[in-house]
Image (cartoon, rainbow, N blue to C red; front, side):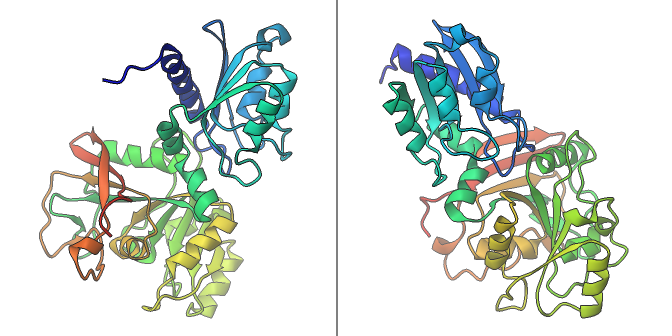
Length: 376
C-alpha cells in the first residue's frame, strides 16, 4: 500500500476546498473557467474566494482582497487552475500574488490557454515562490471539462442527455413523450440547463413536444436555446420562439431553408446560423459546433431527439452522456433514444464508462463519460 505524505494529504484537503469554492460560479463565468482559491497559513484557513461571474474579479484577486498584507505575506494559496499572467478584463493574478509576497502556490491544473499554459507558474517561480502543480488534477480537469474542451478542441463540451423507458424509447410512435420521467428528474434537467451555456434539440422535438427550453423549476439563468433545423420547419407558434429574449434563440440551418421563413424569423429577433449540409442534407454538426464556439458557447446540454444524438455520435462530437431511465415500457413501436448509427462492427460503437449513478424519484440516472481507451 502506498502511503501518502502528510504534506500531500494536506494539499489535497485544501485543494478540494478550492474546488468546492469554484463550483459556486457554475452558470455565471463562461467562457471563463470555474476557479476557486483558498489562503492557508500555519495550517489555518484564512479566507476563501471564487470567480463569481464573467468580467468580475478572478478568484486569486478576490481572495487577496480578503487578507491583510500581514496575512498574505508567507501564506500558501491553493487554486484549482494555474493563475493567469496576461491582461484581460482584470489584471494578471500572478502579479497580485507576487506583490502580496505569498510563500507558496499550489495548483490543481495547468491552464491550456496559450496565453497562460505554464507561463503563470514560471513567473511565480522566478519571483521565488514555491509552486506545486497537479494536486487533485483529475478532479480539477473534470470540473473545467467545458473550458478545456473549448480551448483544446475549439468546440463546445457536449453533454448528451436521454430520458427513456426501460426498453430504450423516448416517445410513443406519435411522438408523445410527456412525461416519461417524473417531476424530480425534470427539476434536475433544469438545474443542468442553468449550469451550461446552451441547450440543443432538433426541430422534430420542437414539433412534437413544443418545449420552452427555459429554467423554471430552479433558480438560475436561461441557457441559449439552439434548434437544429436545416429547412426551417419550426412552427411560428412554437413556444421556444415566444420567449421574452428572442435573441437567445438560435437556429442552426442550411442553404435549403425556406427564404420566407428565414425573413420572418430574423425579423422576430431570432439568430439564424448558416451551416454546411451533411451528406443527408441535414445540418453538419462539425461545422455547427465550430461556429457555436466562435460565438462563445463552451458547453451544451443536448436534449435530443434521437436524430440529433445520432448525428453527434456519428461525428464523434460527444464528451459525456446522461441516461435517465424511467420504470415504464413503451414497446418497439416507440421512438428510439438514438437514431441509426450505421455501425459496421461493435468495435466501432461509441463507448462510455459509468462514473456516477443517482436516483430522482423513481428514475435512475446513469452518468457516463466517453471511454477514450475503448476499442474504436
